[in-house]
Image (tube, rainbow, N blue to C red; front, side, top):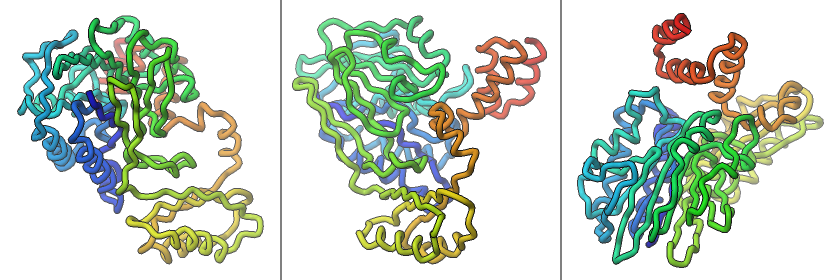
Amino acid sequence: MKITILSDFHFGFAAGTEREEDAFEAAKEAIERSIDSDVILIAGDMFDTRVPSTEVFVRAMQLLTKPMHAENGVRISKGISKKVEDIPLIKSEGIPVIAIHGTHERRVRGLMNPVEALERAGFLIYLHCNGVVLEKNGEKICIQGMSGVPDQFSAGVLDQWNPKPVENCFNIFMFHQSLSPFMYAPHLLPVEKLPRDFDLYICGHMHEPKKSVYRESPFIIPGSLVTTQITKESMKPMGFWSFETESRKSEFRVIENQRKVYYVVMDTGNLERDDIENEIGKILETGHKKKPIVRIKLKGKEKNLPLDEIKSRFVDKAIVSFRKETEEEKIQAKTLEEHRLSVQELWKKLLYENLRELKLNPKTFEHVFELLLENKIDEVMDLLKNE
């Protein structure tokens, strides 16, 4: 079978800005180019928030109707810890879309996340510590998925679930997690903890696409379809993967309608306004379908430069932003742990350390964090009082 592997759409990202269409346009192209597939897999973070707006949710549903109208003969033959009869697919003869939730979509236990809601509405098959077997022309593939869980509990969840390959199937294990050695921070899931003997491994969450091998099986990090954090890695093209189960060959397919990113480092030593404007001008000379993102990192001592005026000059041609390197940033950049953590993860880390000083159970910490994200302040206070 031919499988399309997607991840990290981040629908709703940059809402209210001139970049708010980027996520939808990239996903639209990827899905339309996947209509020749037998199965479409989405490895988490379809949405950028736990509770997307009505407009964002409806647009996601509109995009997911496209695979429903493509007939390909794939059928669901079995569930793994999942009742197939409970999957309310609107049109079962379409291309199956199978998804897991990511870190951006995870909600407090008992509350429905947006990916789960899409399954209830009949647009996809949602997996979390379970799986399904699909069949076409006598070939069977089994997809088992673990949605995003807190890093410090990921190994324990895997141990408790203990997924195993299904006989006479091409077995796929899909998960959404920070993974060592691809990222550096405490409590990450070591790659050695992944279940053995699967034929293909897929890991969402990390935004730079990569292809590797785990125990002689292909290991694919799909990467994101939209730039959410501007770094040097953001300059690499974004896209999705196509995979053939028979040949085990994979192909990275670049999104053609994507906004290019340029990350430039400039030393403030003898830097003048003209130097910056000339650098931006060179970038614009290459031509762009969309206004490019130009991030200029100013390295060195603080210098009075008319940065707002420069941004205003190019506002119709590029999305220009500046970042000043401070002494504190230089120190932090030496520690990969801090350098790679997002703002939410840093907040989570600080909260964990503070609660640990109070000698609270790690599970209590995680519950507190999730409740705070849901703005359930009263429940947090009640929980801490009873701890």
